[in-house]
Length: 359
Image 1 (cartoon, rainbow, N blue to C red):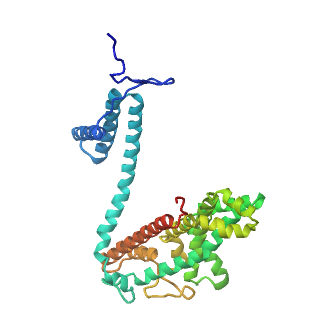
Image 2 (cartoon, rainbow, N blue to C red):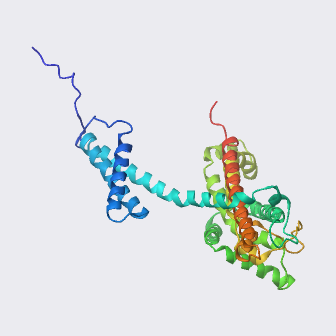
Image 3 (tube, rainbow, N blue to C red):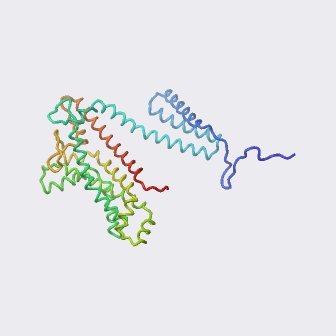
């Protein structure tokens, strides 16, 4: 009588490692074990004086330890280590999301009461209490940001093209160094630079919308250069070489081959750069100031912007304090919506304008 050695599953032995068990926990068992550990941590926290912080700490430690021990006893060391790292990363992500969710909830809770038609159609001209809106500030933000984009995109894109396609030697290293330095400068420094530049010509009392646009462009240009440079580097060299082999000049290769191939990434990087500067307050506070009426000419006088509008509504409330606070929260909500909309636009650009690789 022979014994069939193939009928029962055998553990897998690797040449360079220990025996790996084929047993697996049910799909939702790790989650259940983790929640049981969290519940045990909450009970332990209640015994020692309940607090939210100790509950989270005890729950995370005990839940992660429970998942590791159960997985180690059933699935082996390698799978247990994988589940341990997965639990730690998931927990870190959840903890990082707590302040973000809290921020969004707080802004929504305080900003929705004034999120009405009046807020978007009225300015603060001759308004000292309740009522009024941020119509003038919204238009000012759009105009100044658009002007900053008009200044930054050509400079940043041309600089990125030079660094990737033409730059060599000391000049390329110098440009890269200064771009890296500009990426980390504080926003108030950009505002002071623009203020000093214009006051040298027009005097100390000048406040113009274009000053704010120049300040924002100082912050925006290095972001555009860095993002466009990385995107252009992703274009395969084979495309360039094929174009050169056909006798196409380099400038035409850049215009007709490189840029169309990278258009999705370029659009995404530029859109994210706009989102980076649309909520800046310090440079606009220094250069543009604030008015209660509507001014649509960035070359003539002060202009209102949403970040500065929210700042003054919060820090300088009048007699109707709650009305000022409500307008500040609603302005913050509108800014968050603008940034989210720009990020969605960046995703759509990346999706619909990416070169098609399939047939």
